[in-house]
Image 1 (cartoon, rainbow, N blue to C red):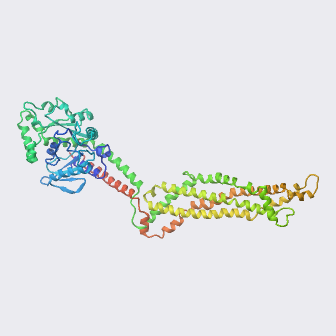
Image 2: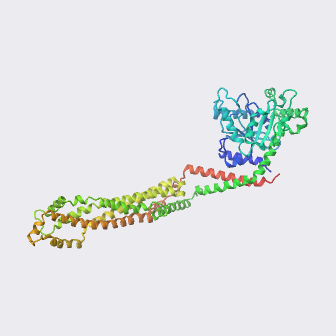
Length: 616
């Protein structure tokens, strides 16, 4: 049965592969943050690398002076069955196994240089390394750049602060176990690691203290005050380590021999002999592994709760993004029709008032049309000079005797022609509103967002339909205007001779005066007034009938048959053409794939945690 630490390692590795991790810049995913790990903290030349190599039992980390660790190294140790070959894998080289650990060291250096260049700069982008060996315990360690006090040549002035901020971003997380490395041959009060650990973990609950270089202390001195907790007390135990000497490193003394020499040192030491069973790198690895597993076990309820919440959120997002499309033509046609109906439903909601926008059509009829009618240049057309000109032209060589019927007709017909402009403008205004509502409806149809090609097809099809509706509407409203000009209202004009006769004789009762009046200014004013009254009557009629025609030809048709022609066309398409219409937005496809992978990861993690959480 897999250990909890091994399971957590696999979950962390899977999270990392999916991008659900951060690099010390507070961008860790919530699951990454919920999974405990051990951060290795220490000043430069404190022996961090030697401690890690002792725990692993392999010489694999870059060495040198100054800042050697310039990127965080997330090191996951996996205990394998005895006799199996040791190997390492990098996340950025997932298909390559390293059995030569000298090549592991080179790859760490090369991968660091790929991000930072061959400089002394640092980067918070981590390197992920997994080591599989029968000689390790299950453990996750994060090796961080060594804390420093001054910037050296080739480093920015902010390097001291930059390193501290990077290290702090890891160790301040409540689920991070701090492995604070301090050299025994320096005063513990000056330890950079302890200073930082005390700031982020004042109770010392998350901090394990490690003293290195015990064998390099001045003769006659020891570190018992620190190790036994008298100088600086932690809730977790202090562990002493004896690293390989530089001479051993130069001679390539292997780690098996180094571990044996470390055990012998503590076993024979007059100062630390009584603590030999609780000293050394092997004990430290077991101690950390046991503590890490206990922490994970204590966190299982919260981790499971977080995973369940994440699963719910991911499934909700998958529903929002939509499930993958079927490959057969029938299912694809059904999907297209469903998407069209979803769009059509939203479009009708805009028209009927469930969503905003339809009221703008009423605004065309209630504001724009009346305003356009009021602005028609009837005053100029029915001016005294123009009336006299048109009536005279209509009379020809023989002036009219009673009423200038032809003059009236020409004046009225000329006036009614002006109504074409407002009528066509009303059609165009409603057409613009309908186009805008189509655009908004496509954008608001969530199901369509997956399919930019289908969106474009629907936009084109609706555009063609609206153009046809507009053409029909224009023909209808122009026909209304022409109808008014084709047949004048008889009753209105039957009254005119009586009115002329009643008003034509001047006081005194001289009939001859009425004949003279037919050629005076007052006569032409009466004609203009009569025509104006008739035109106003027609204007009132058109003000009511133009909206009826526009709604009938455009709005009603848009509600009932906006996509009818489109439905006919897609019914004739082959499977390949339907697939092209359902060609998804690549960004959404990528997002769905990522969500599906994360969902698979979280469900597998939940099942596996449940299966091993009670194994002791």
